[in-house]
Image (tube, rainbow, N blue to C red; front, side, top):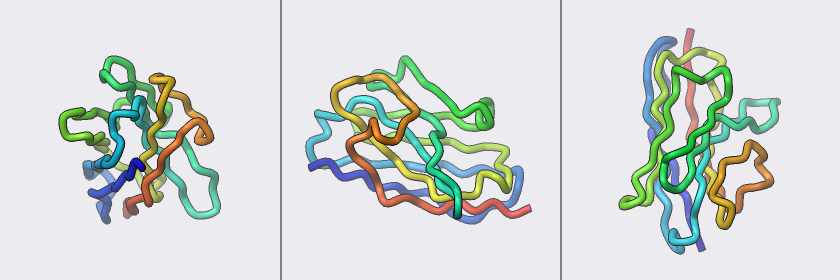
Length: 125
């Protein structure tokens, strides 16, 4: 059974940076595309960024393009989200998700088979 564990969240001032990590374990050979979602209090879960297995294709939420960068290290079974120029509206719990089989990024949460518990990101103004 695949397990995903996020880390790297925290409190940062507006304009600052954070780097999130998501480490996968157990049956990682089945993982293809990996993504980051976020969920703020009272809001729906929102796609943030995704990457296919080789890293050749990425997709981003429009509001984070140019500020966030997703990458992965398959040797370490880890996906990263580098977040720069953070804004208060980026405050949310950030969750890592992975899918098996398709190997292309979709923006629908229902398309993902495995989920982490999330890491809190808080951006103060």
